[in-house]
Length: 277
Image (tube, rainbow, N blue to C red):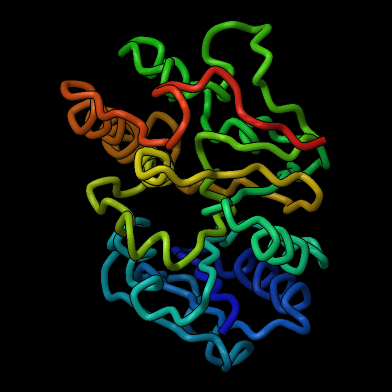
C-alpha cells in the first residue's frame, strides 16, 4: 500500500466531513487507506463516519487521549509506505496527494514534507515553511536554542537560508497540519513523544528526524487550506497547561544536554541548505 492517511479528531464533525471528502478526491488513483482516530467526540462524529464513510478505518477512543497518543494509535495500525498526518480542519487540494507522493518517490533523501498552507481567506500562512508559531519562536530565542533552527527566521532577518513561499527547500520543522513521512523513518526514529499531549509533537519529531540525519522538506507546488479550528481558548487553563507545558518538556528533553545533528559531510549546525526554485 502506498499511503496511509491518519486524522485525529475531536468534536469537528462538519469539518472532518469536508476534510475526508477532499482527501478521497485527491487520493483518486492511489492505493491508500484512511484512518480516523476519534478522541471521544460528543458531536455525532462516530455516527457520521459510520453512515457516510464506511470504508474509513475508525479507532473510537472512549476518552480524550491527546493528539500524540491518538496519532500513534493510527500509525501503529497503518500499512502504507508513507504516513500522512493531516488535521481534521484541513482541506486538501485535488492534486496535492499525487504531487507529494511523486516528490517523495523521486527524492530518496527526503524523509518527510509539509506543503504550502492557505488560510480560510486564501492568504499564505507563514508557518507553512517555518513550522513554528510566534510563541515557539520566542521560546527558542529565550533558551538559546534558535541556532538549531536555521530556517525558522528566529534571528537574522536577512539570513540567506530563509525559505520563501514558492521555494522547495529543506526545512527544520514539519507543520503538524500536514506531515507526510516515510513509514521506514518512523520505524527508525520512533513515533510521537506522547508527553506532548496537544502541542509541540511535530517539533519534537521533526527535530529527532534531523538528529538522526534525515531531511525534512517544504514543498509549495501544491497546497492545503487550513481552517484553524483549535477548540481551546488561548487563555483557558487547558491551553496554558498543554501549550506552555510542551515548551517545558522540550527544554527539559534537549536543553541541558544538547545533542549533535548527525549529517554526514556537514557541520553540526549548517548555515544553509540546498534550495530548489
